[in-house]
Image 1 (cartoon, one colour):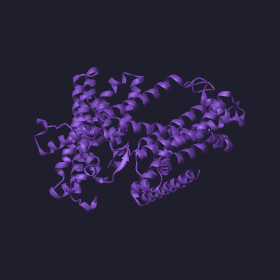
Image 2 (cartoon, helix red, strand yellow; image 1 turned 135 degrees about the horizontal axis):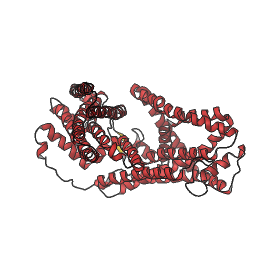
Image 3 (cartoon, helix red, strand yellow; image 1 turned 90 degrees about the horizontal axis):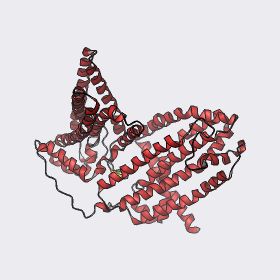
Image 4 (tube, helix red, strand yellow; image 1 turned 90 degrees about the vertical axis):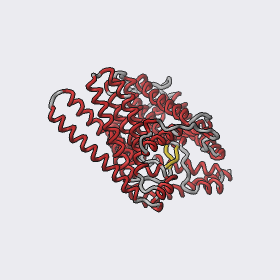
Length: 531
């Protein structure tokens, strides 16, 4: 017991120091502080406000009858959401600040695991606190503070269980990922397949199991409605009758908390001692050499573009920052699962927009930070970085056009005429070309040189502001382009369509050229001290 107390004390000291360092870093960086505040106000409050009427209605239902069905749905949603945070943390391998080697050699491994578990949990759920506070306030408004307190008692054990189970799942997935003796592309395909299967499986479960119009609004995932029975135990002070299943589920939930915490610590301590993360799957392998195709031999920038494409072929982790785009693709796949016809109606346009976003997002949102290891040579041996920037832009354009035309054009040929297909193809070229210049300009505004872990990939990832702004802006710009295409092909308001195209193309051309020139001038002024 003495060793356990010492490990808890050392782990808490480590977690407290890490959280203090993170807080000071955010407070000292005005841009990061604004990003955090924007996330709380813009995203957290938006979610809370959108669910607030439901929370008030849920609390008011206690005045007549305990809403066990709604409670089961809410408890399952909380458990899944917290499990997602736990899995993301378990799959990641973020270090403890800049003192990781010192921490790992000065205190026992189990204490390091405790400190990392506490620190990462607090850092990942900071957005949940304001959302939860507002939702519980809504329950209190509808049913009173006693109802809100009992609901909190019901939620906390399931939240802890979801966290530890998710962490175990994420840690196990990371262990398998590090030990799998296959290429990085095979790993990427397996990971994408697993994520897609989980997403589509959830869609099937929601559509086939959830029912409405009765007291038990949520159908059973397993026989016996376990979460509703658990809610009947917790809400017994309000007149519900606990059953044998509810008592058994409550006991399992309470027993799963200490067992899950011990399992997480044992798993993460083992992986810490085993020193995973050396990417043994690629050790000792000789990569195939690729000659420059004739298409990319025209200029120096084109040859540079080909080398970036080869680097991506060898290491797909260069595209890890595009994960939000992947989630959007999963959303469309879910819609197509319910209505396959959407692939032919929305699919062509979605492929063009996705290609345009890939053209700028793949290589242009953090050009200097992504090549940080080569910057000393680049800045001291080349009069300008324009060749490197154009190479990145051409690589992105080639990548984006492969998606926009390789996927969008065949889909469009099924239901649309030659005029529409031709117009869509021209629009794809315009959007992908403009996207690369705009993206490299955004990357020059907020270049990132520090390495950080994201989606289990440690590198200089682009700024989240630039990435999210570019993704959402790209979808809006693409939608406007297809609106103009529809207006043109309809034959109505020809003059308005012509003026719209002129204004549209002019704005894109100015934004793209201006972004490229700004990036060249800003990066040419860089010195080694700026990194």
